[in-house]
Length: 258
Image (cartoon, rainbow, N blue to C red; front, side):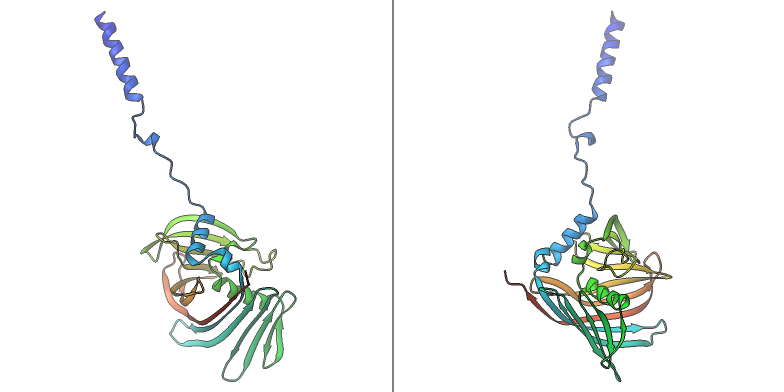
């Protein structure tokens, strides 16, 4: 009888040990998995609202671009005026003047043309790609929701070996979607604490470029770039040399009437 009682007590103890305790890991909620769409939507809230972005009738700004060679010499230094009329009809113009020549790009739903001193010098897909690229830069992160863009969340990763950021990848198909300008591989980086869009990396064969948003401008409730820097970098994102600097100013916005 004593042996039977001992075995019974041992059996009860084993059952008690196997029973999950209150507050054990099995009872804790499973952490929610972050998606690329969630990152972009939070970044858009940080940059304004999608509703306000879609209500823009026109946007104008001045862009100064400086391209720099690896030895530090200036390859080019150009100041452009960008004018985008989105609604009710699309009409885009980009103009600039060099020491000897004036240039104008005109783009709408039917034409994409580039002029030099009033003479047509180029038209078609290459000119359209130039316009789309400019729109993607100024429209981040809103443009990540454009039709056909495939997004994937890569998790929290290290940027420059210092900052930990939310990272998403984006792939484009310009052969299928007219609003896409590139087939390059892109990585987009967002602040892990407040979701702000802080930069990107692109693989344009055979090189990588790391682009950082150095400062931003608030205009009419929307956030736009003020200064950006682009570095030639390694696949890891390690900087090799400063390739370009960009300055944006004199923003003007008009909205559709509510």
